[in-house]
Amino acid sequence: MTQPNLIHPVPITIQQLVKDETLYDEDYREPVQQSVRTQSIEVPGQVRYGSSQELGVTTSGPKEGEAGYVLFRYRDLAAASVTLQQNDRFTKIGNEIVDVYVTRTQPIGHYPSAGGATLVKAFFTDRQPSRQGLAT
Image (cartoon, rainbow, N blue to C red):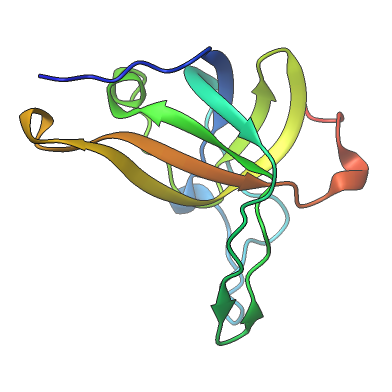
């Protein structure tokens, strides 16, 4: 089975959102206080900084651009028991402490021998740039 390699992978520290344990406001369907997250998990990924060139338009207005993306191999994510989803958090990219959140994912690297996608792009954005570097 064909498995692509990452170019210059660095360790990415991920904290996943645990929706079942997070308290939500019944009316607004948003977390009350703070979201519950898993312990930090480290997975190798290939980073690309820079906002996406796409300007997306939705019914609620223009889509905010991402700060970059991390490319992961599904094989590495599965070995760490991680299924990336929107609102998961990256707290460390390589040696840099960050506080960024996954906005969307895109499966890529489709090979017939693998039965589909072998890679996933996890686009991220910084929700509070003024608090950058304060993540623990």
